[in-house]
Image (cartoon, rainbow, N blue to C red; front, side):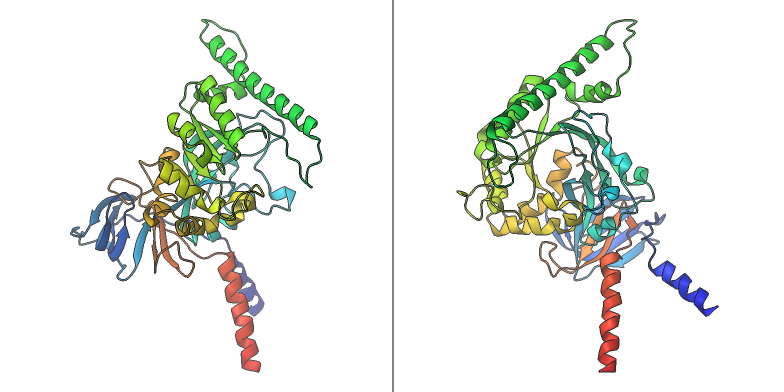
Length: 432
């Protein structure tokens, strides 16, 4: 019996975190400093939640008699942080092929839907939300046209529960416009340019085929076969679905903008290392930028060491709409570090308020979900977290988090291991 009890307890304590349960009663967060992001910061304020929505926020909010009251005195309340470009839920361990489900074979895959492949039981999701990151765009990869992405909230039983918005953008990996000659290169400059030309030709042909398919649909009694690839491209052609193009260098960005104009497509740039050098072009065509991480090395030997750190500040000064992504080259496991990318941007010239907006309100605006998340405002989802300090500071601890008013389990694998080995050294000290 004792062995059975031990195994039962071990199974329970190691079980995945259980999704939060909806609360029928109103809930009030009282006495905290409420950082609305879209408005003024409210000292000693109250946030009132009902049916998963924010119904009031301010200093003089009347709290219903039967409301669940949470004392946030001395604490801070922030909207859920939002990483605008990740593969969270699609990749568990980069080095293990069986856990990577972010890409399909082939070059043209517009019918791919990233959100249906999200693993809600990923160990990375609880670790990420423990740091206040409660929302993310999960993006496909591979090929020229990788597929469509969706916005997810980081709690739920199934991918349907997690999905907030389907079909947010069509992802394109733009080829290098000039040859890369370094120790990693395994192709000559000539071969690279031939590969570039072939890729661009393939991309143009895909759009031509999609337009031909679109035109064929307008013909009465048309008997053309349904093609899932070109069906998926139709929202791009009518500008209801933006292209999200991965482009870092100036030539890539310029070529991507020119292509979008030729195709009459809406455009969002992801990566954007050289985006400040194209500020006039981006401003002219109203192209926002998702910065692909602030913690990274300069791309060229001639760049200053702080060039990547100052990209957000330079875009802000130029009046370009932007937001910051934190996963970068390290993928899903690094999404938890999103607030520190914003902090680095603040340390290198970006105003503190803008740094916070770049990981809350601005990604929501760029990705079309600002009517639901991104700030603490009446009518929006009650997706927020409570901290003992500024989330951009590394010592700050997230003490509670809520998604659509449901309290989220903040335990995770990192904390379980921390508690495990804390016990090891406690026993060791006792023996000593």
